Length: 238
Ligand code: 5RP
Image (spheres, helix red, strand yellow):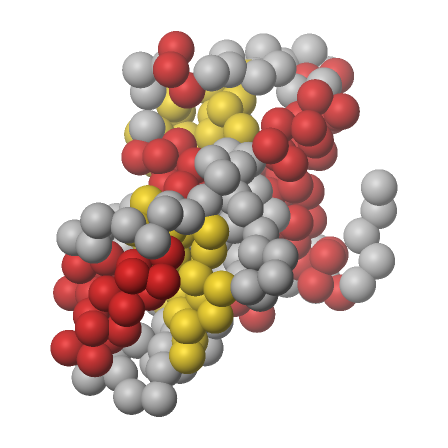
């Protein structure tokens, strides 16, 4: 598969640069989800064909299927004490490495796999880097039981934080809501401008119906930014 759009070239550049920078023979890796991560997984498949001993834990069924297709051996997160690193995309990332993730509805597994890794590297095209998070809605993965009650709790939280005119949308709509790989729903929270992600992020997990949320704070250690000209830059965040 070849990139077509300029942003695909940028995504592929980020994935390739990540391989050059981080990959060593024998490593065990978290395999992110989304189009950028999938360029990385395809490039990883080429490395495996060249004889590299690499195996990965996928963060979604879609990534699992792609890894199988391109020949990347898979591991079960249950069997791994610690992964060497995770490579994963983002919907938005700020200059401190705080991210909104979950545009592909895989945020729960993505966060678990990132947490199980020594390092988390965000791979993004240059359009994903923002000064302030929030133009992209924050996905919140909620259990299906009583999801409207969870939505009300989320509204209370956002009101406490001073968000006005916010919109929360059940992804896929009430007729046919999408289900995550864990069978949950996604509530997309349109906040526009998140002024205090560090304070907001831990508060989601206090709401009982929330399985996980898409604000990834203090998780990315490094980011690789890909450009449409095929170049990629590595930025160390901590
Ligand atoms: C999936 C994610 C993806 O990493 C995020 O949506 C970015 O995707 P893409 O690389 O296709 O722009 O969080 O849940």
